[in-house]
Image 1 (cartoon, helix red, strand yellow):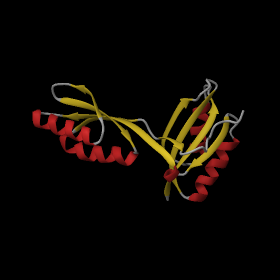
Image 2 (image 1 turned 45 degrees about the vertical axis):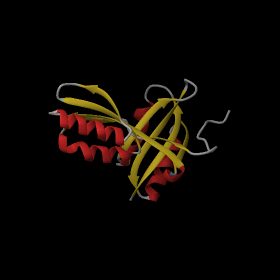
Image 3 (image 1 turned 60 degrees about the vertical axis):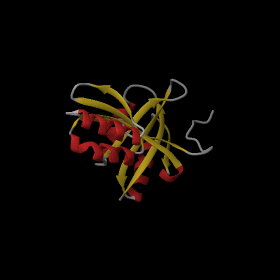
Image 4 (image 1 turned 30 degrees about the vertical axis):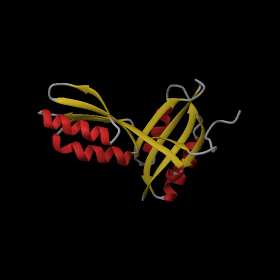
Length: 167
Protein backbone atom coordinates (compact mmCIF):
# COMPACT_ATOMS: atom_id res chain seq x y z
CA UNK A 1 0.00 0.00 0.00
CA UNK A 2 1.32 3.39 -0.94
CA UNK A 3 0.13 6.92 -1.49
CA UNK A 4 -0.55 8.00 -5.04
CA UNK A 5 -1.23 11.43 -6.51
CA UNK A 6 -3.55 11.68 -9.49
CA UNK A 7 -3.99 14.86 -11.52
CA UNK A 8 -6.96 15.26 -13.84
CA UNK A 9 -8.09 17.91 -16.25
CA UNK A 10 -11.88 17.99 -16.27
CA UNK A 11 -14.68 20.08 -17.67
CA UNK A 12 -15.41 22.97 -15.31
CA UNK A 13 -19.15 22.56 -14.85
CA UNK A 14 -21.63 21.49 -12.17
CA UNK A 15 -21.73 17.81 -11.27
CA UNK A 16 -18.22 16.80 -12.36
CA UNK A 17 -16.85 16.54 -8.82
CA UNK A 18 -19.87 14.43 -7.88
CA UNK A 19 -19.29 12.05 -10.81
CA UNK A 20 -15.61 11.64 -9.92
CA UNK A 21 -16.21 11.10 -6.20
CA UNK A 22 -19.12 8.75 -6.97
CA UNK A 23 -16.83 6.61 -9.14
CA UNK A 24 -14.50 6.22 -6.13
CA UNK A 25 -17.47 5.41 -3.85
CA UNK A 26 -18.81 2.74 -6.19
CA UNK A 27 -15.45 0.97 -6.04
CA UNK A 28 -15.18 1.37 -2.27
CA UNK A 29 -11.97 3.35 -2.67
CA UNK A 30 -11.22 6.15 -0.21
CA UNK A 31 -10.04 9.58 -1.34
CA UNK A 32 -7.41 10.90 1.11
CA UNK A 33 -7.68 14.44 -0.28
CA UNK A 34 -9.12 16.16 -3.32
CA UNK A 35 -8.62 19.70 -4.53
CA UNK A 36 -10.31 21.32 -7.51
CA UNK A 37 -9.67 24.68 -9.13
CA UNK A 38 -10.13 26.46 -12.43
CA UNK A 39 -7.28 26.23 -14.95
CA UNK A 40 -5.86 28.78 -17.39
CA UNK A 41 -9.15 28.86 -19.27
CA UNK A 42 -12.51 29.06 -17.51
CA UNK A 43 -14.00 25.98 -19.16
CA UNK A 44 -11.61 23.43 -17.61
CA UNK A 45 -10.53 22.65 -14.06
CA UNK A 46 -7.70 20.69 -12.49
CA UNK A 47 -8.31 18.05 -9.83
CA UNK A 48 -5.56 16.72 -7.62
CA UNK A 49 -6.56 13.51 -5.85
CA UNK A 50 -4.46 11.63 -3.30
CA UNK A 51 -5.31 8.01 -2.59
CA UNK A 52 -3.88 5.07 -0.67
CA UNK A 53 -3.72 1.73 -2.40
CA UNK A 54 -1.69 -0.77 -4.33
CA UNK A 55 -0.38 -0.38 -7.86
CA UNK A 56 -3.07 -2.51 -9.52
CA UNK A 57 -5.95 -0.74 -7.79
CA UNK A 58 -4.62 2.72 -8.63
CA UNK A 59 -4.13 1.71 -12.28
CA UNK A 60 -7.77 0.56 -12.34
CA UNK A 61 -8.91 3.87 -10.80
CA UNK A 62 -7.00 5.83 -13.48
CA UNK A 63 -8.65 3.74 -16.23
CA UNK A 64 -12.10 4.27 -14.70
CA UNK A 65 -11.50 8.04 -14.38
CA UNK A 66 -10.49 8.21 -18.05
CA UNK A 67 -13.83 6.64 -19.00
CA UNK A 68 -15.85 9.46 -17.42
CA UNK A 69 -17.23 11.80 -20.08
CA UNK A 70 -16.28 15.01 -18.26
CA UNK A 71 -12.68 13.91 -17.61
CA UNK A 72 -10.36 15.16 -20.34
CA UNK A 73 -7.00 13.85 -19.17
CA UNK A 74 -5.65 11.90 -16.16
CA UNK A 75 -2.07 11.43 -15.04
CA UNK A 76 -0.33 9.77 -12.12
CA UNK A 77 2.24 12.11 -10.63
CA UNK A 78 5.55 10.80 -9.34
CA UNK A 79 5.99 12.47 -5.91
CA UNK A 80 9.78 12.58 -6.26
CA UNK A 81 9.43 14.37 -9.62
CA UNK A 82 6.67 16.76 -8.57
CA UNK A 83 6.14 19.86 -6.50
CA UNK A 84 3.62 18.88 -3.81
CA UNK A 85 2.09 21.49 -1.51
CA UNK A 86 -0.73 21.88 0.96
CA UNK A 87 -2.03 24.77 3.04
CA UNK A 88 -3.28 24.50 6.61
CA UNK A 89 -4.77 26.88 9.14
CA UNK A 90 -4.05 25.87 12.73
CA UNK A 91 -5.76 27.63 15.65
CA UNK A 92 -3.63 27.06 18.74
CA UNK A 93 -4.58 27.78 22.34
CA UNK A 94 -2.07 30.28 23.78
CA UNK A 95 -2.88 30.74 27.45
CA UNK A 96 0.03 33.03 28.35
CA UNK A 97 2.87 35.08 26.88
CA UNK A 98 5.29 32.12 26.97
CA UNK A 99 2.91 29.99 24.92
CA UNK A 100 2.42 32.87 22.46
CA UNK A 101 6.18 33.33 22.15
CA UNK A 102 6.76 29.59 21.65
CA UNK A 103 4.09 29.31 18.96
CA UNK A 104 5.46 32.39 17.13
CA UNK A 105 8.94 30.82 17.20
CA UNK A 106 7.64 27.50 15.87
CA UNK A 107 5.71 29.30 13.13
CA UNK A 108 8.88 31.17 12.15
CA UNK A 109 10.94 27.96 12.05
CA UNK A 110 8.32 26.32 9.81
CA UNK A 111 8.00 29.47 7.67
CA UNK A 112 4.40 29.88 8.72
CA UNK A 113 2.51 33.14 9.08
CA UNK A 114 0.49 34.32 12.04
CA UNK A 115 -2.79 35.41 10.44
CA UNK A 116 -4.85 36.06 13.59
CA UNK A 117 -4.13 36.74 17.24
CA UNK A 118 -6.65 36.93 20.04
CA UNK A 119 -6.27 37.02 23.81
CA UNK A 120 -6.11 33.24 24.13
CA UNK A 121 -5.37 31.87 20.65
CA UNK A 122 -3.45 32.31 17.41
CA UNK A 123 -4.12 31.13 13.89
CA UNK A 124 -1.07 30.05 11.92
CA UNK A 125 -1.10 29.61 8.15
CA UNK A 126 1.43 27.03 7.06
CA UNK A 127 2.22 25.89 3.53
CA UNK A 128 4.38 22.99 2.43
CA UNK A 129 4.48 19.26 2.08
CA UNK A 130 1.94 17.22 4.05
CA UNK A 131 4.76 15.87 6.24
CA UNK A 132 5.85 19.43 7.09
CA UNK A 133 2.31 20.30 8.13
CA UNK A 134 2.03 17.09 10.17
CA UNK A 135 5.31 17.92 11.94
CA UNK A 136 4.13 21.44 12.82
CA UNK A 137 0.81 20.13 14.14
CA UNK A 138 2.58 17.52 16.25
CA UNK A 139 4.84 20.24 17.71
CA UNK A 140 2.02 22.60 18.75
CA UNK A 141 -0.40 19.86 19.81
CA UNK A 142 0.75 20.13 23.44
CA UNK A 143 -0.57 23.73 23.61
CA UNK A 144 -4.01 22.59 22.49
CA UNK A 145 -5.34 22.80 18.95
CA UNK A 146 -8.68 24.58 19.02
CA UNK A 147 -9.37 24.18 15.32
CA UNK A 148 -7.61 22.80 12.26
CA UNK A 149 -8.30 22.99 8.51
CA UNK A 150 -6.20 21.84 5.59
CA UNK A 151 -6.75 22.22 1.88
CA UNK A 152 -5.56 18.90 0.57
CA UNK A 153 -2.65 18.39 -1.78
CA UNK A 154 -2.01 20.31 -4.97
CA UNK A 155 0.79 18.99 -7.15
CA UNK A 156 2.50 19.59 -10.47
CA UNK A 157 5.23 17.73 -12.34
CA UNK A 158 8.65 19.37 -12.34
CA UNK A 159 10.23 20.50 -15.61
CA UNK A 160 8.57 20.69 -19.00
CA UNK A 161 6.22 17.72 -18.55
CA UNK A 162 2.68 19.07 -18.43
CA UNK A 163 -0.85 17.80 -17.92
CA UNK A 164 -2.09 20.63 -20.12
CA UNK A 165 -4.75 19.87 -22.71
CA UNK A 166 -3.30 19.88 -26.21
CA UNK A 167 -4.61 22.66 -28.42
